[in-house]
Amino acid sequence: MDTPRQVAEKLVTGISEGRFEEVPRLYAEDCVVEVPYATGGAAPLLEGGAAVREHFSHADAMPFRLRARDLVVHETEDPELVVLSWDYEVTATTTGATATVANVQFLRVRDGLIVHSRDFHDHARFAALAQ
Image 1 (tube, rainbow, N blue to C red):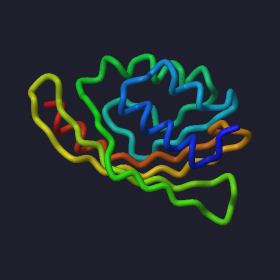
Image 2 (cartoon, rainbow, N blue to C red; image 1 turned 180 degrees about the horizontal axis):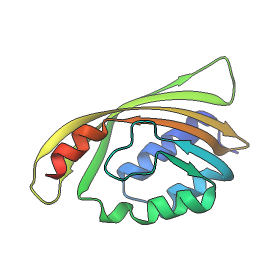
Image 3 (cartoon, one colour; image 1 turned 90 degrees about the horizontal axis):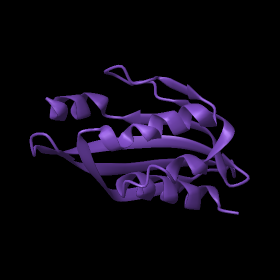
Image 4 (tube, rainbow, N blue to C red; image 1 turned 60 degrees about the horizontal axis):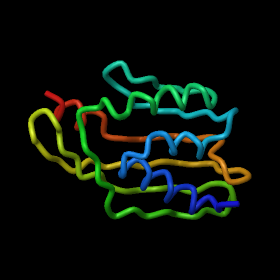
C-alpha cells in the first residue's frame, strides 16, 4: 500500500503527465475534495469517487499543458496528512502563452487512498492564461 507521500507524488505526476484515467483511482469512493478558491464555474466541492471521475473526465479538454516542478511533500505529525507545494509550468494551448502557477494541497490519505483534499490553486492565473 502506498504511503501518503507516494500517493501525493503519484497525484501530481499523473496530472502533469495527463494520465487523467489513472488519477481518480488515487481517491477513495467516499472522498471529499474542497477547492475553496475555484472560479469560472469550477466546482468548489467534489463529494465521492463518481464526482472525482467526472471532474477528471473533462481534464483533457482544458486549454492547458501542465508540467509540475519543485514538488515538496511535507509530512506532518498526523501520519495520514501531507502538505504539498509545487509550481506548474503552464502553456495555454490556444495562445501559446506561458506562466508559472503556484499550488498547495492538503491531502489526507488512508489505506493508500485520498479521503480528503483541500486544493489551493491560482485559479485567477489559469483564467488569465485562458483568454
